[in-house]
Length: 177
Image 1 (cartoon, one colour):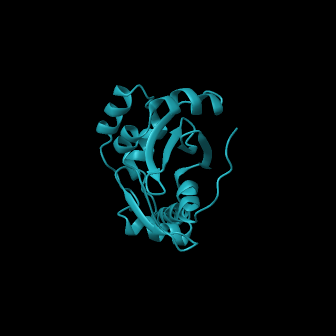
Image 2 (cartoon, rainbow, N blue to C red):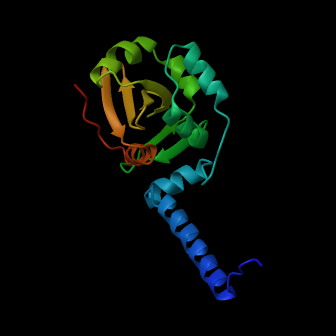
């Protein structure tokens, strides 16, 4: 004879599952502040967005860059998004996660020789650009987002949400030595 779960326990289980799903969705949406979430959603991002990253991976490996889980995860969710926004100081700006364009537009020596050494030899993969393509965005194996423009290098955020919030707010980033 099979053990039956009383209907009251099933109802309780369903309530718990519903509340956990609701909590997880709300926690996920809080990763962006309200203004940034509105900007990225207007640009085509949505919870659960997934794209194929094989073209990004192929380009990265062909150009001699590293490809790792954090790059793949970030570009699966944000790849090919073009984000148009008005900064908090009233300037129209763009950022994008077209890793192929970012890889084509930067001299690889900056990443492989200069930036690499300045951040304790962490592996970097170009993932996009910000500020009208002047700053190349890169992710490391921990998920930290860096920005580089020629010999200028900065930490933009500890994850993509923090980085996008800072970019959309036109935050000034201190240069890394």
